[in-house]
Image (tube, rainbow over all chains, first blue to last red; front, side, top):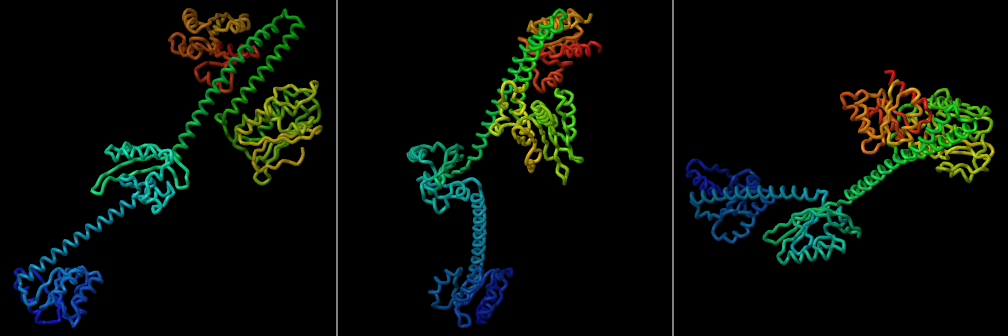
Length: 504
Length: 121
């Protein structure tokens, strides 16, 4: 009780003590300042405030308390003729007004109980409102933070809700689209259909997209369109019918699907090609089998004359050349098809070079040409397909031997002086060299340097093409440098930072 | 004289193999798989030289039937085929052929050596 008149306090105390069971404890705040303390939040269940206290207005006290956040239920005690206060006091949350001169114990009790009940009801209401707010906040957060666009439209198809996902996907901010027709988000070619569907809905038809997930196209703010997936829902409240569209940009998914389909087509083509190549290989070999087989049988025959034998040898040589050609073409085709059969293992480059040179020295036909191997003392192994690297070296060294009349073929391995990793393998010959205008062509299949028929060298013209394809497969560069009349250098670059020597 | 069976639909090939081998072996020829399996049951050869690309029943299927047959399952079977691309040898050996000789035969000794390997065992 906030009242500066002690007799009032005594009166009220007397009335409260007459109520059974000591239901109320009364505390007295005899001044304005003490009243401010008493009315602070949660201090008391009910406050009785005298309208005039310390020559101040009780209402002023109430106002200050409310500003300080007090929610205590307040009953104002008024004197005669103070009823005009009522309206102001009610705005400040006073629950009741009791005329001091008409106060009775039962009136006081009823008023206080009523005030407390109302305070409790208010508390409950506040709690519910806070919960609702929190729930709405959570819901808004979900909507706002969704990656998908969530768009609300009213029954005249105007945008009334727009989340961050929508902003990201369409490029418009909320302010730019609210109130605009949803058609804004559709490419021109889809708008008429939308209008028709909407008209049907307004005439009582069920919107045919509701409850479904469909793939459509959207229009961004920048004018570009994109594939989207739309799930459309509708609901009806007292305010009318509303639509919620959840929209996902599926450009990426479409792109992946297209890539997968393109890859499958390519794989299909590759399989078809493999089968074709295998069949061709088989069919080309069959007649050669007969040619070579019967030729060999005739050569073995004791009755075959020397001249016949010579002719048969020529047939055999040509048949074997043709077989080599078939093998080369099929190998090239197989190499070009893919990396499927690269078998990488740690290999010693110097050892591979020595093996190849040993093998080729046995087959060497021209005794005037020697093969010189230069390998650094220390060299680290590399991880590669040794068999394929070997094949490249065989091709390059055989080529060099084929085109060198006299002198030497040098096989040089260069390694890094710091970590001994192999950098480069050079095959250097002292042959006729390659004219500059043909340097670009020599790696193409069936290109041999054009020469007079007399000086033409045998070969399929596929060795360098195969070598380069193999190098590509292994991730190496194959380069050539050449000077006409001086010779050529073919280099396998094992490391990308390799620098070619200035001249062979 | 040991008996070699040649299964091939191509008469050129049968003639080549026969001519190469007939001084040293008894040769029996078959031009189809069914005919061959019938023949093997009547008179078991020491080694079978089997072509792969045959009409109706191909060499791999003939081999499978040989391996499933209680009498014939341990017959030495050599694939003689123009399927001779990289990887084909491994393919046929892992399919259960005892050995593999590619067509065309460049060196007749290869054929002799191969047969000899399976006859001596």
